[in-house]
Image (tube, rainbow, N blue to C red; front, side, top):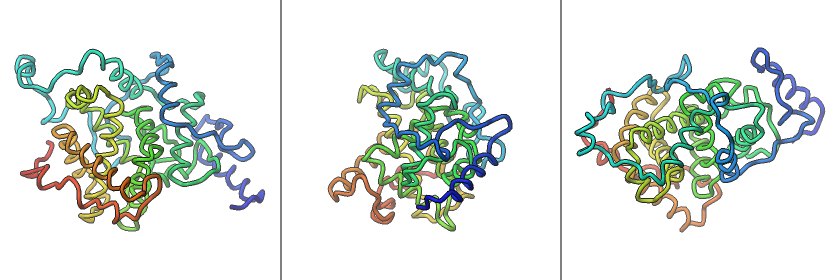
Length: 324
């Protein structure tokens, strides 16, 4: 690491060059400002539990990607997910969430409607922590800049990619990269995303998975598992990690490229909505293997994660179903 003034000046110029119109850039992560202190998932969650998520700070956004995106677009319910008539739903549909868990569900939905706020220090700490965990850097980074594209956002401002997931998308990323059980997987998934021929935008894929999990929650597809564990956010976070585990296994094992992303995410959506328990069991098996090998908290080689050994798609997705 260089401590010369030249590097600092280049860092400053890069930040200013990528600022959106009208943005001057908050005083964090820039030269002379020092890095924003990292934040744990629990500390960030405490903020949202006590914050007033008022309508002035919560913005509803359409469930669709930004223009030019290459992944799934959702402007309404899918043909497979439109649900049953009320009477049939009562008899045959998924179980309802227990009343005691509805407050936690509502918090998750409120976070999904909460936009990234430059003036909210906790939001900036979440963003900075995701950056530092993935890059293994102790240095601060500018709020805006091309370095976010290297992490897999679509542009210089990560906030523009949060439509449909809001701060819940960043919170799930934060859990993924800070929990010692999932950190090795996160680092290897990030490494896979930077592969010369099989690369993909890591953070954008993660946000798409959050969108899938969020939609499954709204459709009550996760109520049985949440009721069983008497938790909501823990189920959402672990299912997000489990879905990324399955996606990376297929991406690596089946030599997928960016052109296959839409189909893979559609298959993943079907898995999340129809058999979340299977995905969670695959993640649990991965964690147990890592614990037995003493590898939690550090990245193992991608082949040792054994993506090809869990959640066989030919069993789980029998008949090659596709969303319409």
